[in-house]
Image (cartoon, rainbow, N blue to C red; front, side, top):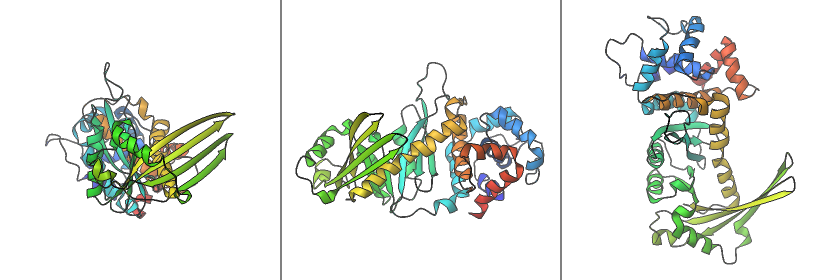
Length: 365
């Protein structure tokens, strides 16, 4: 547990100098409670009281367990970016396992419950940079009131991009984003849609001629009564990067996908702007890896941590507790025992020995 305490000591304490509870200890209690299923400050305080005998093994707790009001006040004040950076230090050994060619997916997720009446459901968001192969959040940045693009660029600046491939949806297919990735030494695969109409038009034109079969690849999957076929095609962008003032553009990718379910067939065609000329197989794998941020992160946050139902709304609280959920997911995934994620989270709350083993895995990573 010392690794968590040491990291949390670097989180700036915005409270008055006479605050009773040690900030690092409070953050440890909050994090462990979220890992075990707590979704509110009241539940953090209740969990802390129920497990006080466990926490006293490694925390001083001079003033016992903080109240729910104390948890609430702290999370409203501290900086979510500083809290996330502290977790980055805790998980640095895991992040060091990134390899050249690994996909880092960028995407935002709305904190749907973190809004007052009359506010848009997308008023508050968390933008995450997610290492697909490691299933690890590398950085999270809050985005309020339409600032997803700025938050994504900030997140990119917090991580080592050299040798990695950044993927993102069409919102991030713009000059500012590619310049940030280029500056970090990374490559990019960005969805290309109507927000870059001129570039999309020229991309379609590049696919209108005769295509070398060596620049195409097809995959087919059948499971649970569903059949999916995806065909990837790669073409050079030639001088279009300079023409469109889109720095680093080297190629376009196209994926033609069809899905058959119960005899009904649907199809779609997607285009991508690329900073390098990958093989079609690599394009298929890269695009598939991007969707792990939806399936392995966002979906799990809603199903296992009930993020959409969370009602933390004031000041920095939504962002801070969203950071705790993402990092709890990262930590529990380091446990390699055979069981579903939801069962592991529940078991951590039921079984003190199992909880201890999960937390110890990080120190040993």
